Amino acid sequence: IVIILVLAGLMQAAKSFGPLPSVGSTPAGAALACGYLLLTAFFAGSVFKSLGLPRLTGYLFTGIIVGHTVLGLVSDPMVANLRIFNGIATALIALTAGVELDLRSMKPLLKTIGWLSVIAVLGTICLLTGAVFLSRSWLPFFANLTLVQTVAISVVLGVTMVAQSPAVVVALHSEMQSDGPLTRTILGIVVMSDLV
Image 1: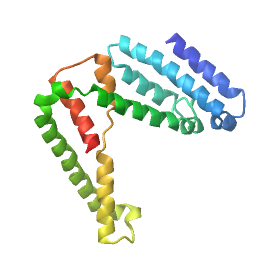
Image 2: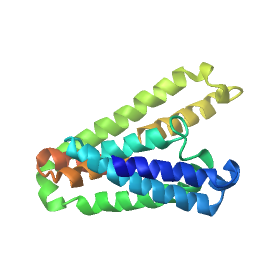
Image 3: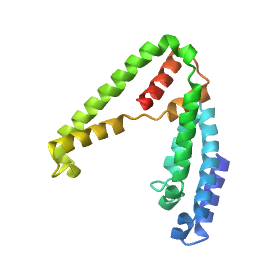
Image 4: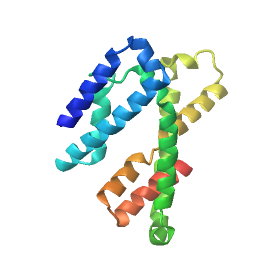
């Protein structure tokens, strides 16, 4: 906790060295934010782990606290410059999820995973598409569209909203070192849902 507080003080001091807009909008601001976030999240994850909670909870807590809405240690321009890390992290997590799938051990679960994926994905797509279509009068971008265009946009939004991220499943799977039918089923459903 002391290290987290020291890092917060150093981040505040580093931000005060220059005019606020230039600190966050430069590559140096992105590097500063990246280093600060990685170190702080690492130590916060350790604190949460010692409390019996997943490290992921510490990472989320850190992001909320140091963001612009609470302490403001990481500004919006800094976050915007960190978008490249989002893409890299998403790609690495998706690769990890694919590697984690052991198809031989999942073979007995494939029927269950298939049915759950079809029901979860297609059912949710239908429900979300219907909800978007029914709420079109409250959504300004539907104004002056034909019925076919409205249905097409509703389907696109339904498909987009049903997409799941394997990040949480992979993080908890690796941190808790869990394995068994439930873990394999959940991981399989998330990966299959993304593929669908």
